[in-house]
Each structure stands twice: as C-alpha cells, then as structure tokens.
Image (cartoon, rainbow, N blue to C red; front, side, top):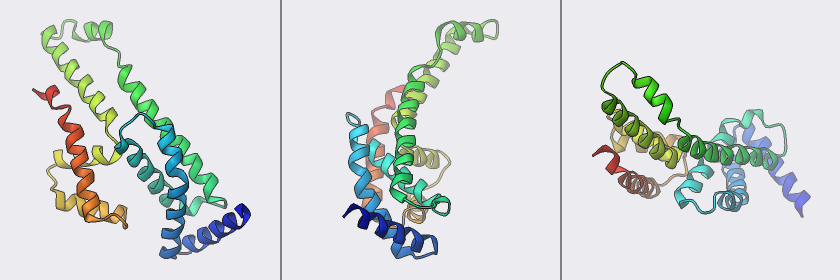
Length: 189
C-alpha cells in the first residue's frame, strides 16, 4: 500500500514538474494532509495560527523548489518541515536573547540621553518580541500595511501565492493577525 502511494506521489510529482496544475494541486493536498499532524505536534502549545503559517510556508517552499526535487516528494517536504519548525524555535530563542544591559550602557555612553536610549531599546526589544510571535503571513500583512498598501492589494498578492486560498479564509487570517497584534498595542503607547 505504501509503495503504491509513493509511486502515485512520484507520478504526480513528474506531472507537476511538467506543468500540470491539477497534479500539483493533488500532490500538495496529499502532502498537506501528511505533514499537518507533524507540524501540529512539533509546534504544540503554540497558537493555531503558528502552525497554520508554518504549514503554509512549507507548502510555498515546496512549490518554489519543485524543479529541484528529483524524487520522493514526501522526504523532501519533511526536510522542509524540519527546517521551518527549527526556524520557528530559533526565531523565538533569538527574540528572547537580545543583549541588553552592558551593551546598552556602552551604546548610550556619551552619545546623548541615556534614559531616551533605554526607552528606544525597550521599544526595539518589544517590537522584536512581537515579530517573533507572528507567523510569516502576519509579518507580511503588517509590513504591507506599514508600506501603505490596502487589503485589496494584499488579497491579490496572496491569491497569486496561494491559488486555493478563499476570500473568506484570507480575511479570517487577517483578523487573527489583527487580534495577535492587538495584544501588543501596549508597546506603542
């Protein structure tokens, strides 16, 4: 049974590499079902949006690297999962390990008002922490909004990146991002 599934996936991979969008969609659906529980398990204890973003990032990376995949798409996508989950943990670790005390005092030194510099560093640290808790989707939305783009432009952008994304799902994700960012509004006050 497993060998038959592997052969089917390799056949779909070959068709997808030759430009068959139907085969690509079917292969992505199969792989998404296989890796979803793995990502959920590895990112357990985090918000659902975290693992949803990770799953989306994995599938986007898989599609981008499709021409590089020789065979065994399952093995390839599992490596992408390992890298993405590791990236989530590294991002959270680095957000918590920002050097603060002595380096801050050295940086302030004789350049100006130490209390102002400390406030700026506090704000920077809070922003880094906030960005560390946001998935790629939310970071892209935040960046685009800061650049003055509107939600219609964002919808068009994400629709191109993710053809199966529904309008309703897009706005649900945006709302979850808003809720996440709303929890951090105190850092700007």
